[in-house]
Image (tube, rainbow, N blue to C red; front, side, top):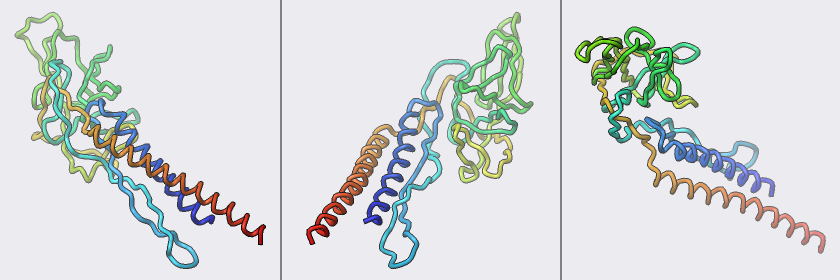
Length: 246
């Protein structure tokens, strides 16, 4: 009886773990540039003495979904979206670089250009800092042009150029903060082929309908596993009662 309980308990645990991943994806449906986490169940035989009759279903990460989201026009000067493949480069608090598709940018009081989550953008000349300006424009090649404060509208200045990269997806890993990093911990070079769409944002690539259906399926699996644990307890009670009668 303890074997049935063990298998059912493990199944419930794995279903709950998979449900957590789907819930996280669904919670980020409206997150700009979000990439969904992928997972799948695999069969793992239980090792030990005796015949290999028991198999556990284990939820395993399958990386992240590389499909692009939909570009949405906002008309905001500091909103940018990657056209096709590629990434924006941001500076990590502990040093080093990470990559994101979230192009909802803002300028801090000190002039630093950062994402809405607070990560400073990296350009060809290091972290991007803007001087006082009247207007700002980010070009399709990542160039940042401003009209300096106090100047006429036709007086422009090229401040920096965003570092746009496009490493192969299999060289990237997704962190708990949603940022992508090189698997080897290093950095990658700029790619001039990566282009931007100014005044646009990329939506999350999570499909709400698919995520909801998967959540319902996993919830039912969890309930079945818990029911199996309850059935095991009832069987044990019935067996104990028969032994007492004998």
